[in-house]
Length: 399
Image (tube, rainbow, N blue to C red; front, top):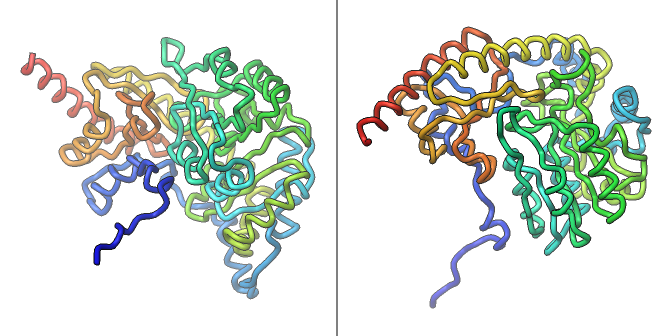
C-alpha cells in the first residue's frame, strides 16, 4: 500500500531556513575559525546579574509563576519603559521566554492565514519568516543603500500600507544594516497606520545600542509617540543591552485590550519564564545602566575601528551604522553571499553572515557583528583582506 509522504504543514514547508545557521554549521567546532556570524558579544553576562539567578536557585525558586511574569520584573520593566519613552504600566507588560518568543506570541495574537503584513527589509530572517508560520502573506519594502548609508523611502512604505494591510513590522535600530527610524518617519508612519487601523509591531531589541543620540538615550521608536491604546506592540529582549544572549529572556508591551489574549498564548506556548531568570532580569534593569553605558562605548569604538579598516579594503563599501551591533557592507564581485561566506569559512577561517540571509535586498552584502575586541576584529580584517584580494585576482584572471 502506498502512503502519502510525511510532511508538515505547507506553511512550514515553505519557510526559508536560516542562511546564517547554514554558514555557522559549516564552521562551528573548528578552532581555527574567527567567528562574527551571530549577534552576540564576546563577554559573559556581568557577575551581579548571574549572582541574582544563582541566589534564586539556591533559595528554591524552581516552580511555576504567573503567565505574565513575576510582579517585581513587570514593575521594573514598566518603570524602565516609562523613563525611556511614554508612561507604561505593569499590566501592559508581559515577560516572555526570549525576545523571539515575544515576537511569536505577538504574531499569534495579531495575524492569521491570508492576512497581509508589510516588513521593512533587509531584516533579521526570523522577523520575516515568523508571520508565515501563522499563514500570513508577507510583502517587503526595502531600505536603499547610498552615500549616506541605508535609508527608508517613507513614501514608498506608506504606499505599501494599504487598507488591506493587517500589520507593519519594523526593526529599528535594524539588524543587519543599523538603520534607525527618524522621528519624522515614525510620526508619518504612525499617523498613517492610525488612519487605516494597521497594527505596528516594533522589534526594539537594539534600542539601547544607539550611537547617534545622547549617551544613554534609546533610539527613536514608536513607544515614544504611541498612546497606550494605539495599535502598537513592542517586542524586546535582555540579550543585547545586558549581555544576556543565552538566557532567553524577553518581554512584550501591548495595549490593555489584548493582554488577556496574550496571557492565554503565553500559557499555551511556554507557561511562564523561569523565576531565576526573571530575578536576574530585575537586577539587570535596576542596576544595569552602567553595563549599557560601558557596552555602548565599547561597541562605538569597535564600530569605528572596523568600518575604517573595511573602507581601506579594495572593493569594499562600508558605512558606520547609527545603531545595533553590525557592519553590513558590500563586496565587489560578490553576487552569491552565501557561497562567499562559506568560502570565507573553508579557506580563510573567517565566520561572517551572508547578506542573502536578510532578504533579496541584502544580496551582495555581508554582515559582521562588531561586539568584539579590537585584536579579534583586526585578525578578522586581515583574513577578509586576503579573501578580497584573492577574489579580485580571480576576477582579473577570468576577465
